[in-house]
Structures are given as C-alpha cells and as structure tokens.
Image (cartoon, rainbow over all chains, first blue to last red; front, side):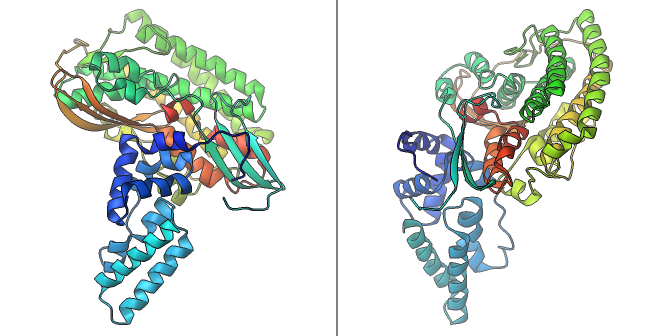
Length: 129
Length: 362
C-alpha cells in the first residue's frame, strides 16, 4: 500500500493483535510446523499480513481444509494451500513452483519424505526472502 | 515496500458519514477500479479481554455485553451459556424460551440498524428512516422484556433475571403484528425500487469459495449460499425446528434481503416462543465452577465464539473472544473491496457486510 508520511506506525497495534491468545496459538503452530522460530514467524506475519488478516488468522486456520491430502504424502507434509491460500504469506505461484520441484524430485528417485523436507527448506527460504 | 503505479490512493475514514464507527479503508485505484484495499483499525481498542482476566464471572458478565452495544444480548447469552456449560447448570424451560425471545429481538434491532445504514449509504434516506423507526419499536419491546435498551444483563446462570409480565407479553405480541405489516411493505420497497437495484444488484459479489476460505459467517455467508447458523446446534432452537435463511446471489442486494428475511423469521420464532411458553420458574440457580470451554452462538452478524477457562471460585483465568465481524470485514476487504468496479461502491459494499468495529477491536 502507499505510505503516507503523516501516518502512524501500525506495527505496535499489529503486534498486539498477533500476541492475543488465539492468534498466538496459530503462530506457534505454524512456526513449529515449518521449522521457524516464533520471533521470525511473528516478524514475517507483521510484514506480510494486514491488520484484518492478522485478526482473522485463527478463523482462516480453522477454515482451511486439506484437500486430497490423505492420498498424497507430499501434500500432507508440505500443506501448500495453508501458507499460500489460507494464510497468504507465500505467493501462490511460488508455492506451485516449490510443489513442482518436489514432485520432480520424487520422480527423479528421491523419497517423498526427503522431497518434502527439501520443499520445506525452500518454503523457509521464500518466507525469509 | 513495493512501488506500484496507481492513479489515486483514497483513504476513507476513520470518520466518515456512512460509518457507524471509526475505521479507515485505504483504497488504491486505477480510474474507477479499486486495485487494492486495506482496513486499518486501532481507533477504539478497548482491551476488554485483558480487563476480563482475573475477574469473577459476576463482573465479566457485565463486561461481556459491553463488547458491542448493538448485539449486547448475544454476548451476554454466549458468555453465560459457556459458564453454564463449564459448571453443568440446567436452565428451566421457561427461561430458555425467554432467552430466545430476547436474542431474537436483539437480532431484529441489529438487522434493522444494518439495513438502515445500507439504505442511508446508498442515499435512500426515506426507507432508511422508516427502518430506523421500526427499530425503535423493537427496542421498546426489548426494554419491556429486559428492563433496558442496550446493556440488559437479562441472562444469568441458570435462567433469566425476571419473568415476562402479561402486559409486556401483550405489548410484544401487538408490536410484532404491526412490525410484520410494516417490514413486509419496506421489503417490497427494497425489492422493487429501480435505483436501489442499480446500487445493490450484482455489486460486491462474494463467491461461496471466497466466503468459505475466509470463514465468513452470518448473513454475509448465508447470502452467498452457505447454509451455516449456530442456532442449528442450540437445544432451544432445535425444539423450534429452526432452519436458516440462505440466498445464492452473494451481492449487496442478497445480504440486505437475508437480513430482512431473518427479521421476518425472528417474528415467527418469538411468536412460537410466546405462544408455547411453558409455566414454571425462570431461575434455577447453580454455582459456577472450574473448567474450560469453547462455546459459540449465533450473533446477528454471525458466529460468536468465547473460549473461557475458569478457576474454582468462578473467576475467569483466560478468555478469548472471536466476533463475527472479524471474519466478515476481512472477507469484505480482500474479496469484495479489492477488485470493486467502482470506488463509489466501496462504502455501500463495506456497509452491506454490517461491519462492527467495536466487536472487531474488542
């Protein structure tokens, strides 16, 4: 969004929202899931999500429905739509690229578990970029 | 911060004649088209959850209904029913029915206020004032039942604070008759007026997928075809064979019409409760004890959730409130305002979702 020089810094308010009990629970879960520290995950969310998305974080997390994940080991361990659609901190095209790479790695002989671990590393890189 | 080419960046609010409460919408436009929108909060943060912590339930019950001045009855109801659920307190049948009456009256006044705001925003002030007049009738009914207009504190653990008197029952019954006649007329006005149609039909279309993704709730979700209503799971509403109102259009028109239809539905529910009101006491008593629960109820704007942990003395140790406006404002900002065809529709789309900033900021 456009930055107005006369506007106040919104980060303290965003941080207050993010540290509410329900939001905090979701941030801790996501940080653990993708192998990031709590502080880093908070910083990423403060930077990439606006106030309303932060307020709605727990509801979006609960409304997220894993699709066809039981049959697909890659999908169930990477959970691509969680970070690209439900809680949009990674652009969808980036997530598609990561998933394509993981699928190619599996086709090339890598075990799904190792491919998923590699994909999660890529996700961390994209988040921190 | 990414740099992008935009024509104009338009801030709406925090003080805006169409908004009931302060919020700021920042819109980036190219011509009439809205490229992106963001809602800024922080103008009326109360920190009420933090104030509630460590206090006995007797105090928190009054704080709960002060989260929102428009839907205070449901905050009172959900908090008390959560406490009852923790402490296994039974509610007498008569009190359960009276709770539904109070809740439906609250829903009616909230929906009428929301539709008033919408009509006022699209500058149909005549219909807006008619609706506000009808809301006053409902507020009078609520006052006769509970003794207060806004912060009623009517619902207490194990029942309701006071029984309904025969005079008050007659007042409500005759008021409902008048209200039904008038609201039917105003619904027809809304449905058939060509200028209202131009400002409302096919404006602010919310798809079922977007509504599900953001967990939209209440009339905003039901106007997009989502058949969800917490009243379906409430024991008293189950006895009344409640079925939610849904529509498929997903536009401003559908959201307002769902509210009108729900007002008519509420009239039917109240009549059903009053005609079949069982005899007996309205306060069963009980002691609030230790425990933890997540409890949801259907507020006028949608699903309202309280997560409460209490200690042996009934003090609230932890509390988190998820109000329906959080989900609805979020979906409105990112799926309706972003991509709106005209900047002139931003206020009407926002108001059609019935945003409550007091609830959102708590």
